Length: 142
Image 1 (tube, rainbow, N blue to C red):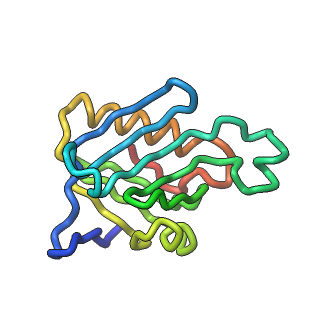
Image 2 (tube, rainbow, N blue to C red):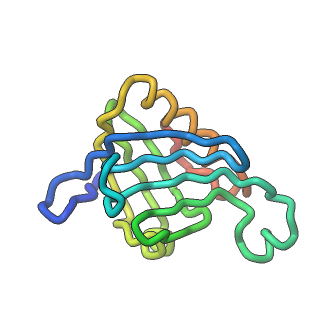
């Protein structure tokens, strides 16, 4: 997978923090800054009820991605996801990329602790394999 997610200066965005919450629905979060609320954050939410007819009808019977600021939201649409060393690379459908305001092949540097990297790998696998089987990424190298 190629392609980068540059910031306004053309540098690849560095994600400095990661966390998870399993209180209600499992959420994995990654963010660019721990102090700036307007910096980029990515949330990966596990599908909590793929059998719900209402969720099926609405196309919400799969994992969810949210990009802040702005809470841009998309359900499914991750074609590939790889964590290699300290890089997160995604390949998104054009529709998902448009909905999230991201390029179709975003790439992020992960300036995280080893524990956070392990959590990110576990969390991405958990989230991206939840919901509709046809939405599981063809490449899931985490």
